[in-house]
Image (cartoon, rainbow, N blue to C red; front, side, top):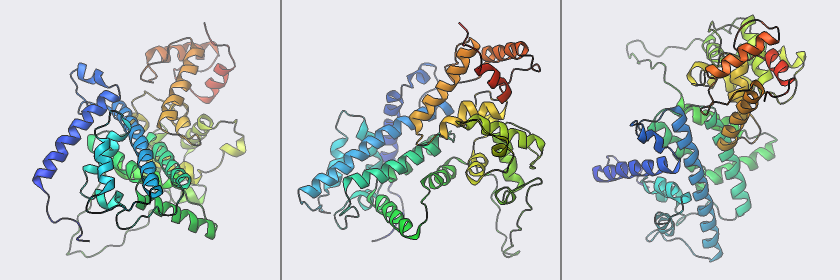
Length: 404
């Protein structure tokens, strides 16, 4: 009713900051990251990308559990025919009470509500209940679909700082607010009438990318120059389809970075080969020449141009096939979430390591032992010398029995 506050409350900000630090330390323990403290790096400030990923997953688990408790609470209050009163907010009593429980599920969920001055506006149904008339089944269905899409998008990006981690948690929790749920159900209803499709995956990717992407350049506005029309960039050389022609050379270079190849901003022979290798790696079926020798599809282009660069993933990937098979394949599976993605990546590496007769690296890296085994097998197969995993090498390796 009054809009955003004109100034910050120093006392509330200080309390919120100290509470956040305390909850992050608890989350570090719950996520099993005490080894960082033992090494003197500290948690969460000394975390690397893998540590932040583990923290993010632990937070998702707690928020998801707290979300279900919140939906159940709203349902039970409605069954009792009780109205929420703004002067003595039932929802505030609910989340405050959860903070005293031993269960991990609602702790982070509650803190993220209580640390926001807008908690009542988001969660208190004292004035208007946007969930009125919606069944619990429909509420949980739309929340589950949104959360699954968000977890899948988050798994394909890298969180590298505490602010990014907290922002990801908050956006994930927003999915469970009455306003978000009501908006999603209205959007789905309108789409069914119009015959259109609601793409939760694309929405989640845009949101996660806005949190984890790096700001490359901010251009200062010069009032003396006036507004300048932004020139539409020319399509990248070698583009085949409308999707590829809509990509700028800079976006093509981002795709090339994701595919572990040199960046020249064009769709040359090397880029086409890398795209085909990546497709073979992420596809659950054997692809034909017709499937391979064509331009990027919209989902492929959207995923690759916003994906973390191959060199920044920290797993030592050298080829597009390695990145696709050991990193992207699990994230692109239908219904993928943080747990399934991590499990899938570990399983893929373990299966190939077993074929090679070596132990899988605990950090999922393609380490020197793994590379040496690949180099040895390439010689045995009569392939050119090297230590990289390609589709041709994988075909020969899959045909042999696992080594003892």
